[in-house]
Length: 229
Image (tube, rainbow, N blue to C red; front, side, top):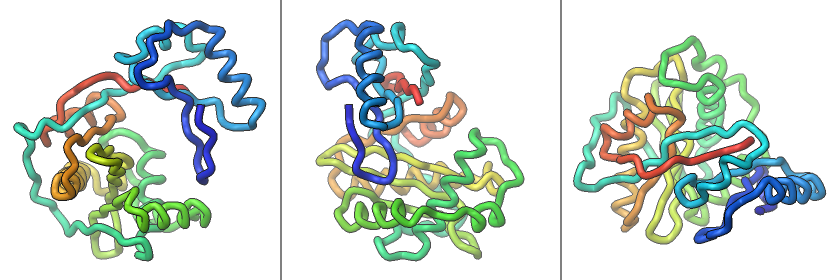
């Protein structure tokens, strides 16, 4: 179980290589410890490495496809608008956070009405913003945006760790969906990772429709990510 010192919580998850058969009592003990420490009661795991956990979880389990880049199938995408990587002090980083919030509040790939008004109305938490800036300075996060005339409208983040990197937070304002922005941002993050010598790039998709977008870029399904939140 992880106790976050950052402005957002971490999930409890099984240890890598754990061969234990999980029980309802195991889940209850973790929940009791989370309650004792006052942290959110959230879990995250890969079903294929902890297959016994899903059956004993005491809440609804969210299951999403986990995908890994297959270099032999990788393909680039011509971006429909300019893309750029943000540095730690770029004022557009706060706007990128707002894009992510608005987009994930309206999940899926369908277009919708949410646009610049909703993005600009979102108040970014100062502690979270500073934490993200510090991660950029330390090389732990790479934020990339697609920019229109009035700033970022699609975003994505690369989180490198050694020779492995995860792509997270790929999001497009609903009003400009179905233009290939999510795929373009993802492809650019993949290129950035490979240029840095990253060997393995992975991500999780919100659902099968989103997974198909990533599969067209050269990702293949490797497992099932499970969440309780």
